[in-house]
Length: 131
Image (tube, rainbow, N blue to C red; front, side, top):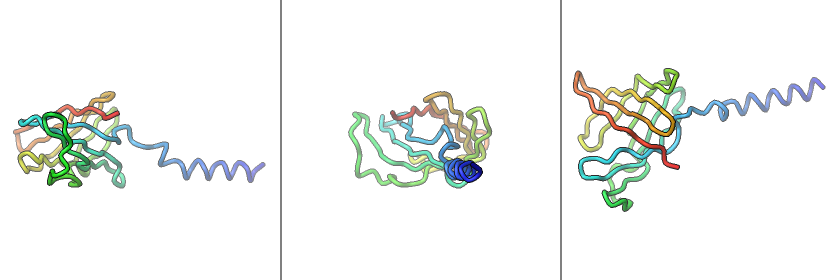
């Protein structure tokens, strides 16, 4: 009986990281930019933090842009979970302005509000989870 309990404990411990997956991980659609284009950002765990990479890009008509030069580039890094759907301490790169901002995120269901600031100048977007 002890062997069965030990084996079950080991299985649960090895699966622990899968059960502890952060709720913000997944594929997110950015808010359309000035030209109407948008991106899909793959958000995942990077060690103990959260990061995000541009997976795909789309023009204003929803056509996939395979020629988009920023596919595969890191957009979010060093983001820490604060609890209650809040994330902070990270950086976000805005491809449209080629600027990096200190960033915070707030998860609410299938919406993710992403905010980036340089000094007192801030920008924010509402992203939606891709089903």
